[in-house]
Image 1 (cartoon, rainbow, N blue to C red):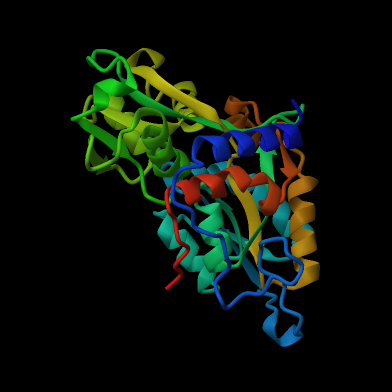
Image 2: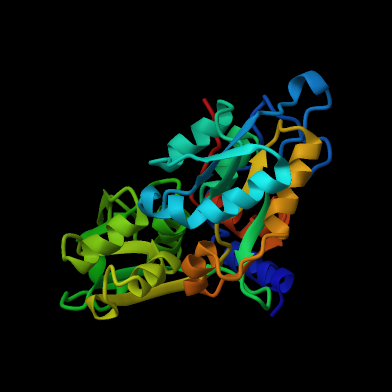
Length: 319
């Protein structure tokens, strides 16, 4: 199934699954305009409102220890420096909220936001996503999994009822949003009522916590789990999967809305012309079969995620 057909199918499935849940309409914060109807902030028309910083600040979503990814992204950021003529600095953010606030405040210019944070970053921080990682054939995505230790007595999702499930953070799609909607729709299980909730702060924390039996069960992105197994951080025989979701889009890459148009074009060029072969980026994300950046649109490619937000009654309050 090609990318567009896959996303249409996912959106239809999500809409059918969550049709009875509360709805919340997506809209941008009042500081942004959307005259072309693409659901992302327009580039300011007035040159005085556009920015052209000497140093571009880049941040990758904090799904794992930021220190791991400073080296992974170093070669790509060198490439971005060559294409844009700017200095480029890696910003090791510690949380999704800090990353969103940094872009909203003008301290972050280029970023990869995790799947669940993309709508909030678009609405509240003027994030303009344009790219996503994919395999050579154009396929992409990851699944939300609910995992437990292989020695636990959790065999099915129903076994979590009355016990504890660990989420990552409320901005994460696979770490909170998707499991919350799916557990309610498919299993009639609501957080705080049918099971207790704890938060680990990050996917690697949840995965390590389950592997070391600190957490009974956790909802995670299997792309992060796969990379951790491949690096030898955990072993496959420590984890049992009790639920796997449909496929979701991965981290969305984009820019702050108020960068000069010609600078935004050069940043696009840096992503789509990057040669992955032999790079640290290829070594790390090749573990998930990803070896290129492909163009995306927030309106189409994040429709399934906005549907999940609607199912959870999410409102984009940017104050």
